[in-house]
Image (cartoon, rainbow, N blue to C red; front, top):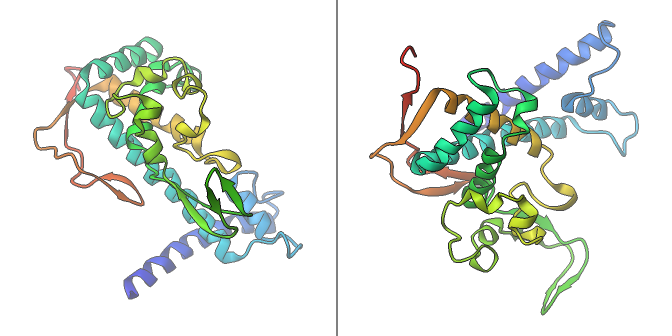
Length: 265
């Protein structure tokens, strides 16, 4: 308990130090505002004179912690499962590598090229379907709603298990548990037969994850750089055991062998 409190205080102190740096720049006249990025918007809300819009210090710190976690843990999880699936499916690994080399050569990935990675986008979507970092999303019922024979009373919390929908053979076919990125060859809408609720790894509706584009872009950059340099081979030591610990993680880790594609590496 004491260790947890010390860690919580350490995280809060770290966030407050960053906030104070922004505030000091405004006080000293080195900047006109706290910034227009996410942190800047939070600090502006923290200093808002309207009590109805004002963000408490606790809320500011919590928002920063959530954003940091969401941007790191979930992307790490997605990358780990993608590496596993490409190591297990050499044909798709080679297709993705050819696409990356064709677009970027041996140069660093750029924004223009990232938008052209069609095969990698298919692989990302299929990985999110099979091993999405989020197992479900929690929502509160704002008012009483009737869904066919089920009545949901107001002010209760419900868990919408996207992991169940993503593995439903009625939605995806009898091969639902197989890794088949070509399901998404013509986009998400066609893959889901225009059923929005069949695939929502980043949530659904107005509360869809704000970091969706950033996460997929980050994933494309990292995987492109790996494929440019290495062949990924699954280690015989790997034991498949996905386990939900906030996000979906490999219980025993993912053991792969990276074989350099360049003799001088």
